[in-house]
Amino acid sequence: MVTNVTSLGRNGVYDWLVQRVSAVVMLAWFLFVGGFIATHGDLQFIEWRALFAQIWMKVFTLAALVSLLAHAWIGMWTISTDYLTRLSLGSSATFVRLVFQLICFAILLVYFVWAVQILWSI
Amino acid sequence: MNQKRPVNLDLSTIHFPLSALTSITHRITGVILFVGIAVLLWLLDLSLSGSEGFAQASDALGSPVAKFVIWAVLSALAYHMVAGIKHLFLDFGIGESREGGPVAAKLTVLVSVVLIVLMGVWVW
Image 1 (cartoon, rainbow over the protein chains, first blue to last red):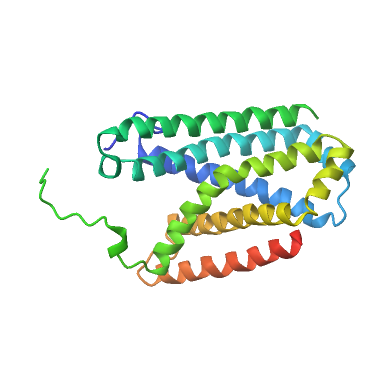
Image 2 (cartoon, each protein chain N blue to C red; image 1 turned 180 degrees about the vertical axis):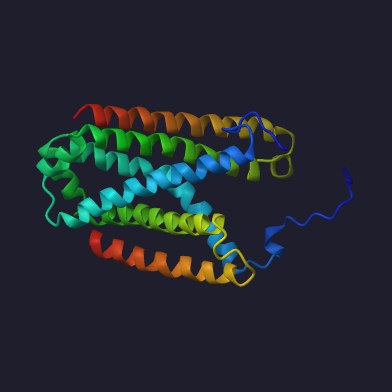
């Protein structure tokens, strides 16, 4: 079995499953919020804030966010290991790939902290 | 490992069938979303910050540039979801055949084009 120290689950089957489960959670969130906006023709601030003020919506949104972190990490990791290789970059490939992965991780961390701050300010 | 095995990774020499194009588009939209999620978070932040922010977010949806950016992000999201749902069907063994591949690829394009047009109608 191929293993890699930077992959989320250390093996492909685990990453594959995480990718699916996280996708379904985010799909549910986007369909729900999209449906909410679509069914509230002239959406007002009061309704919008009331939705996110409820504890279950905070949990749902947080679940979608954790899913986003895992999903985007696996996706960007896959891309980095597909294209930033010895074949395309020569001997500096490992260094470039690690830097790329660190930047991706930092961006995801910023997204997460930002989103938590949005949710808890309500 | 046999070091002399043939390798053909020069993508410009490989013919891309529709299923390959939908696959690479799925990946490209994923990268767009990695950046585009910032736009969605910004909108969420602004719209929940207060009634003024909510009005600003609504106004932002009024400027042509913002409309285009938001439509582009939503389009990438719609495509990425449709192609992702196709993957889930395949994982359950539905359409997992030689004939199923091109059909699923065509359906992916068709459904996402409809959604992208609908997103455009909603944004504008």
